[in-house]
Amino acid sequence: MSIRPIEPDDHAALLALWRRTPGLRLRPEDEFVPFCAYLQRTPGLSLLCERQGRLLGCVLVGHDGRRGYLQHLVVDQPYRAQGVARALLRRALEQLAGLGVQKSHVFVLRDTPESLAFWSAQAAWEARGDIQVYSHSEESP
Ligand SMILES: CC(C)(COP(=O)(O)OP(=O)(O)OC[C@H]1O[C@@H](n2cnc3c(N)ncnc32)[C@H](O)[C@@H]1OP(=O)(O)O)[C@@H](O)C(=O)NCCC(=O)NCCS
Image (cartoon, rainbow, N blue to C red; front, side, top):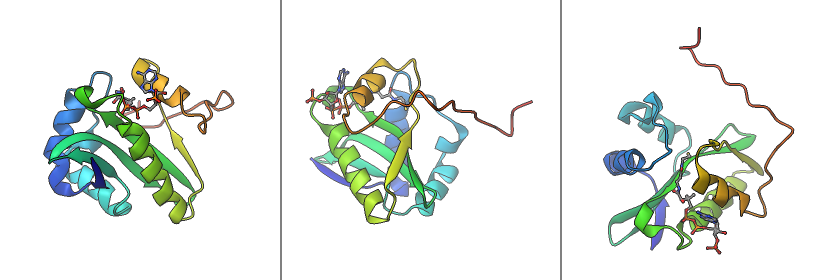
């Protein structure tokens, strides 16, 4: 099992993984062009895990120079409960810390029980009850 940075060429395999993952909401930003632009903003930070060329899981990692933001932490169904997500998360946080980003956030949809179970089990992560997230979209009325 090895972890390496996501490259543009990985897009098709990642998109297929995201599409077969119940609960994951695909967005226009998951299409090839914005996906590549995202990777370019924070080169080398987004990670995938593979074994013998087979994609096991991934995490998209970005930051704004102050806080880290994780998205699409996904492990393909047959490879769950083997520590893949834990390993991806550890590497992602090490890389962010190396850039001076000491604090990170993840937004977890309430209707993704496995995701919630994973994040609740991470002792170093605090579920925030003191923050309400507001989102703006150019498509908003
Ligand atoms: C959440 C997810 C990434 C976890 O991946 P994983 O590789 O199976 O997780 P790990 O094996 O690294 O688990 C690490 C720890 O998290 C906890 N954990 C993980 N999955 C869990 C589950 N389903 N229930 C309870 N605890 C869980 C355990 O404590 C585990 O430690 P242990 O192995 O010592 O028991 C995977 O289940 C997944 O991809 N789910 C769908 C993701 C999703 O819905 N995304 C949409 C929101 S963006």
